[in-house]
Image (tube, rainbow, N blue to C red; front, side, top):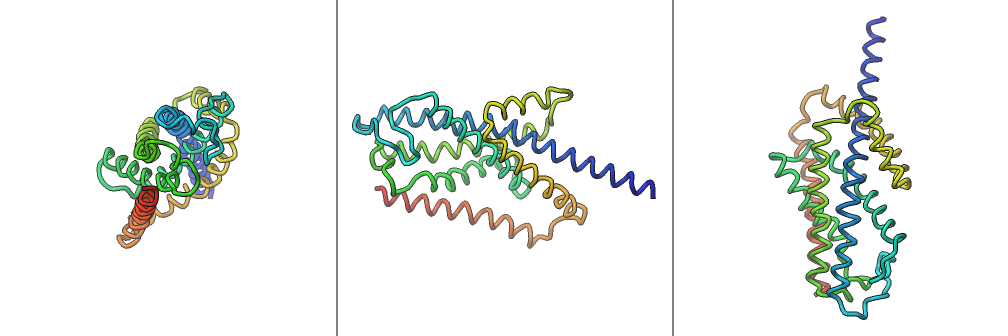
Length: 246
């Protein structure tokens, strides 16, 4: 009985360690990638469009509540904060879909990038509102806001894969980096806590399936078909919105 209790204790510690390791990856890969690609990238895209659009767009409030042509520290921080949110969510999404991707690493990351460009691009590009009616040229506005999520999908896959292979460093350094990132963007903490709860459920369930052997072919095909359907629907919606704008 003592041996059984010890085994259960070791398994619990192992599950807890995996949850913390994956949570570390979500924060350390997600926040910097989101801030740089989604946050700073969006700021640069809006700057480019401000320069290429007519002067009349300056001072107009965008669909996201930002005043076009106006640079403020508060507005810039909010954009970087939005990027941090996107980064953590994107890292979590990549971790969930990664086991079902096909091909070598570079191909998997490219397919994620293409899917992100189609799905998120269809959410950003729309005929309603004013953004894509006043920002010129239209091809540049559409191209930038499809390319940004595609680049993010590619970058988040690369960041997550590298940190998953390396794992967190030893000693206090493993907690200093995520603590500093969360201190810089404290509104992200509730999402990280929610991710911790989800991982605490998902990790043992995943181990249960692994212990039962390979997932049946029908199940694996169904999961991959579901992810493919989401990407295809996003692409269809994106093409429809572009046609409506033109």
